[in-house]
Image (cartoon, rainbow, N blue to C red; front, top):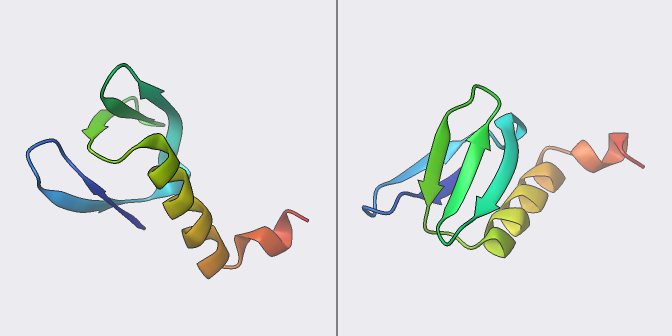
Length: 65
C-alpha cells in the first residue's frame, strides 16, 4: 500500500496495483480499476516514486526482469 493525501489533507493508503491511470489537469487524479476517481495532493513524480519503492519492497521487480 502507498500513502496518498486528499486535497483536504486527509492521508490514507491505496493499493497501487488498482491504479489504472494518472491524470494531471491541474490536480492529480488517480483513476482506479473500479472506475473511482481519487484527487490527491502528490505530484505524479512523487506518486511514481512511491509505487516503485513499494514494488521493490514486495519484490515485484524480480518477476519483471
